[in-house]
Image 1 (cartoon, helix red, strand yellow):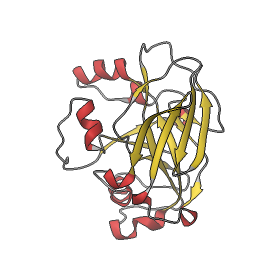
Image 2: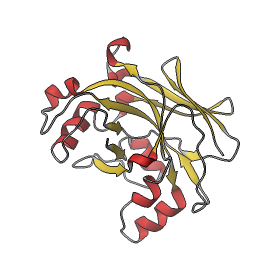
Image 3: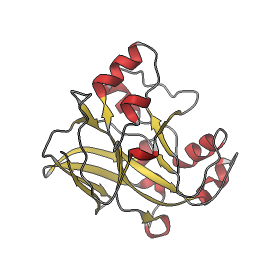
Length: 206
């Protein structure tokens, strides 16, 4: 099972991180180790190596069949369910890595950094995956909201692009990027992720 992350896929989030707002020539793709996966409402433990660990709330897509070099027009056939996930990021470590031109593995792919909620079959959504609203509440307050129509690269474009470099397999996950509004988590925070009006993720921070 592979976990893919997409960086800078919402223009306003790029702006909050000091990036320009133009559309990049290609999606920014990174991977997370399988030990990063956090499911079933298990708590997230803030690592000792970071002084600021941020939430990045995202739509997560689940791959449902083997695929390689998939054309965008066929990409919708290669995923069957979506949920809300959190790409936990050691932001201070990321800043140091970026300054040195180093990969993001340590700040993005550490154990427990890929939290996912309960998956909802695409056929039950009642609308396109590019028309979904999602948000994250911390301690009962909404802290981040997203709308998939605002993605720079659509879900189908991401599936197609990734498949040109990696063979997609059943069970692989794609974190499709985070909108504006990222921020730090703290010990004893209670997190709830919502897809449309349905709560699909709930967990605590330790």
